[in-house]
Amino acid sequence: MRHRKKVNSLGRKAAHRKETMSSLATALILNKRINTTVAKAKALRVYVEPLITRSKDDSTHSRRTVFSYLKNKNAVSELFREVSQKIADRPGGYTRILKTGFRKGDAAEMCFIELVDYNTAMLKTDEETQQKRTRRGRRGGKKATSDEEKPAQKPAEAKKDPQAGQTEQSEAAAPELNEEVVDQKPAGDKPEAKKEQPEAAAKPEEAAKPEVKEEKAEAKEEKKPGASAEKKDKSAEKDEKSVGKDGSEKEDESEKKDK
Image (cartoon, rainbow, N blue to C red; front, side, top):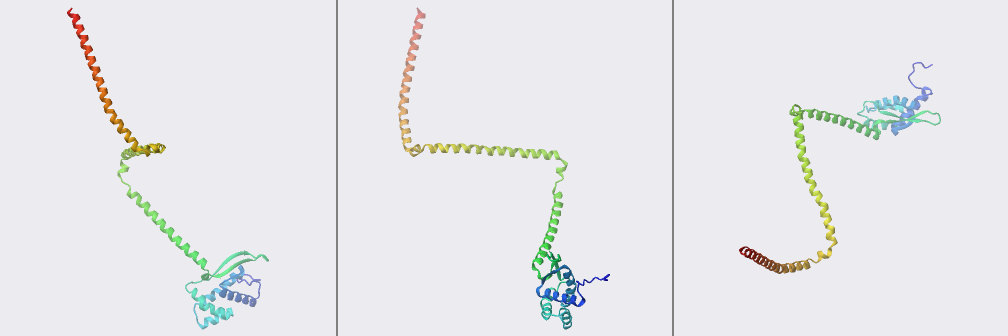
């Protein structure tokens, strides 16, 4: 019975389990990402992360210790040359498990296990989220400062005399209405100007002959002075006749009175 045993044997004997972990760790170091079951990935993480930490100390002793676990020269050289430099500033947590669903054959839960520093897409998303958090903090600070400044700018006189403020607003609004009325007058004249244009367009012949009109006007002006003189003569004759008639009539009346 396996009471209080935390190590997952993965259904294997000890030797078989060690070989499985060694092959999975070698594949992970060479390929940087592998697809396996969740149970094996969790067991591999405990197996490979201490080896990656050991690779930070590039010495003969640490290389021989890692080789006793991996049993692959190419994996050991890759771990100490490239991976150790990539994870030099990271204090643990070198791997990431991403679950992908269930396998069709036996419904085993599958996942990807990868080295964190080699997934550039995930690193970019982490940087973007960090920048957004800082921006949100700044925006909140700006709003707080602007809200604090607003009450300081309000004058104290407006609070004391609210009625005076209303009268001033009404007086200020009155000239604005007058200005709008004045501005609307020329707007009403514009349609008349537009109406005059079609009349001018309807009589192109008259516009084409301005000289003829001027000649006719001059002829009329020449005729008018003579006609006016004749009318004056006629009016003078009528006045004389009326005077004569009046005088004769007056004489007749005076003669009758003498008799």
